[in-house]
Structure formats: C-alpha cells, structure tokens
Length: 211
Image (cartoon, rainbow, N blue to C red; front, side, top):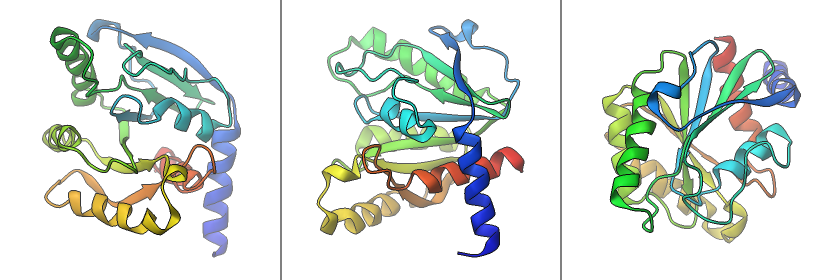
C-alpha cells in the first residue's frame, strides 16, 4: 500500500467515524428533503442486509433499523455523516408478500428519488452473495442505467458463503454487469459481521465527497 493509499483509507475512516445522525424520513415523493449535501444511497432486495451494512460502515449498532420482517421499511431514510454527506437507506424491493399496490407505490417513491436527485453521487446496489443477481435486480440495474445514476454492485453476507465460493460469486456478479452503462466496473464483497470490504466501500464514497 502506497502513502497515498494509506492517506485515502485514513480519510475514509475518519469520515465514517464522525458524527452520524438520522435527519429525515420520507414515505412520499413530496416529503423528500432538499438535496443540500452529496448523497450515497443503498438499495437492494428486502432482507439483503442494507441496515446491517449501514450500521457496520458507521460503527453503530442501531443507526439504521434492522428488522426481522422483510419489507418492513416503508420510507426513504436520510442520515447525515458529519457535515460532509448523507447516507440514504431506500426501501427494499422484491418482497413477495406485500400487495401489488404497495409494491408499485414503493417503486414510484424509490425511482422518483433516484431520477431526480442532483446531489446523488453513487448508489450501492446490494446483492446477497448467496443468491447472486436475480431478475428483479437486473430490472433495477436497467432503471439505474436509464436514469444515468452511477452505481456499484456490493455483495453482502459473504460470511455466510464458504470461502471457496467467494471468487465465483464475485465473477458471476461481474458478468451480470455486461451491457449496464451506469455500473461501476468492480464488485465489492462485504460482510457486516466480519468487516470484509467495508474499508473499500468507505474509501469509494469518501473519494466522491472530495471530488
């Protein structure tokens, strides 16, 4: 690791070690707050581990609510990281037990935010490492492409995958990026339990804050 790499990692560590607090929740498009700071959004299927990852990134146990019931989060939650940026927890998608009307309302809320947010620097599209990229994830990727929203695919729950299967999971996810114009050309493998990949994700976000 070079001196510049060490400086980047330390800057990212300091950013995510600073104050972080919940600032707003929006259950409807007209309740989304003004975009005053750079933002990084987290989106993924219900029960993919969004809240656990946000908590692990910020070193907090309960910043983002971790629910045992998939599909429970019904609003966009905004967290301010120091005075530097917002972390945005988007409602999970693809949960089969919610009504079609509610699913449509959630999708409208999520993509109204994604398409119209000038301050949005990057989306972390979370994929369960054990499940891989599913058809519903591919649809989200197409929508992000259409909206020209830069996103990075982040594998979650790698601690639940045998070590011998880690590389295959990353390669499969990387292959799924083919043809997706807004996708960042790298897969980040993470675990909220072991801490794998968290430093790399922090560094990516921190670099975009200062860009």
